[in-house]
Length: 157
Image (tube, rainbow, N blue to C red):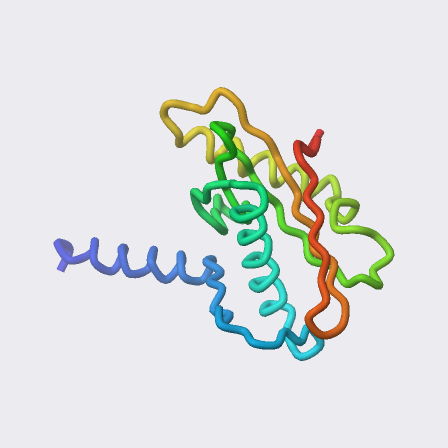
């Protein structure tokens, strides 16, 4: 019986991973976007897809990974921009919100982003010479109306 313990351990670790993982299962072929009819999770997933498309098409970023986790900390997008490693935080807010997506990043979130980025950098060999934090803020209105703002090299200290 003891020689099969590794199987149960592997299965339990996999179940633990699935419990922590967040998969965006939002359909990619949306004809008419209606923000009012989406759940919060659907809005977040679609916002990340919009931010990724913007970063790749408008800014020329190359995607490395999305939704990278370390313990309970997450980095939305990890990209490269002409040899620079870029950690991208995506913020989705209503146009009627009192504060912008950039202003909504509090000290606790900044600390979590720093720690997650350091954990990611520890796993890289060789380490990049430069890296930065960017914020992509998406303000959405009614129906398919939205505006994307990119903040480059945001200080997290």
